[in-house]
Amino acid sequence: MSRMPRTNGAVAVGDCLPVGVAAADVARLQRAPGGLEYAYRCPLHDADRVAPYTPAFARQFLTASADGLCCCVDEMPWSVRHGLARSRLLAWLLITLWLANLADLLLTLRAVAAGRATEANGVMSYFLHAGSLAAGVFKVGLVSAAVVLLWILRRRSVVLPATAALTLALVALVAYEALALLTA
Ligand SMILES: [Zn+2]
Image 1 (spheres, rainbow, N blue to C red):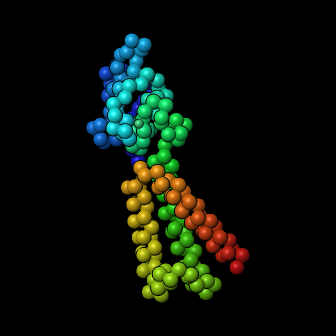
Image 2: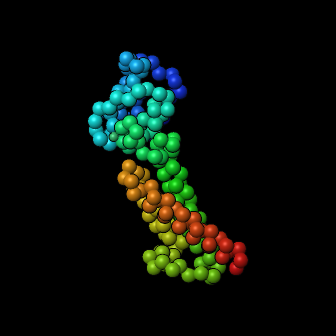
């Protein structure tokens, strides 16, 4: 997760607000004829911008630039303008995905051990015959690698909806398996 610097009004003229680790992600507060303004760089368009300073704008800038999104005035993504940090939402989805996968593994192993179900997935079936430890290591390893890959690619717009769909499908599968186990 990105570091979130303090923005609750505790900024002074000339302050630099570092965001993340990239040196380019810096906003500078400066005096302007009409009051204070924010000079910064939009990480998406790689262009220098100036905006009137408001605490709300500072918060939006920090959220958007930490995610590498557009910070141009009035062009920030909807999610940023409404204070929703995409990376935070993605992190929670990925954690849920990883845990749901673990639950799916445990429920499948239990159902197979009880002779109530056979693994429909051919690859998983092979590993189940090799032993439940091998099956567990394979499944958890595969999903862990996928979670890391999705996090690395998080700035691509397709990653959040794709992760949400994947997580929802797996949670539904786990719910179905749990229900089947309870009613068996
Ligand atoms: Zn921009």
